[in-house]
Length: 153
Image (cartoon, rainbow, N blue to C red; front, side):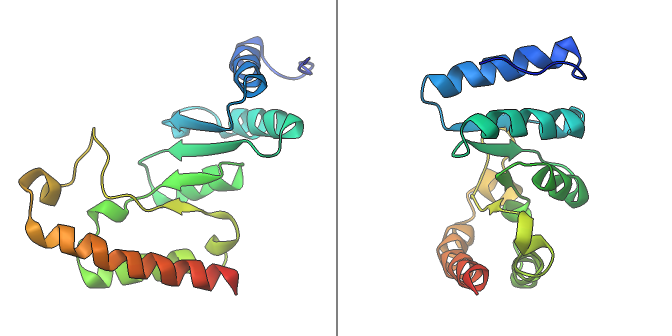
């Protein structure tokens, strides 16, 4: 598989070729650590190159950064993104966040990943093992199901 490199700097070719190698081996999901620290144009190009060869390949953005930047990464092709869901502990915070994600224009392009923690940045309530948080995680399953329903409309 050749990569068109007329306008692409050489240092961008190697990551793309590496990604394409793994796609050829059957890899379908790439978790990208801190993509917001690299130029967005690079990701837009790389994702298009990879998905032009295999549209089923997914890119997960592990970017704990400002919401505007996270949404920008989604617009440039990241299939799914980590979110600050874990650090929202009050009911009003969770409702506000889910409403934002289910509304326009976010629901058209931003696919958040609701997970309870990340091993390198645990939120305060998981550091202490607060029992209420584990009950809240079960209740959030209902909120996520409502979000899925809204996206189907």
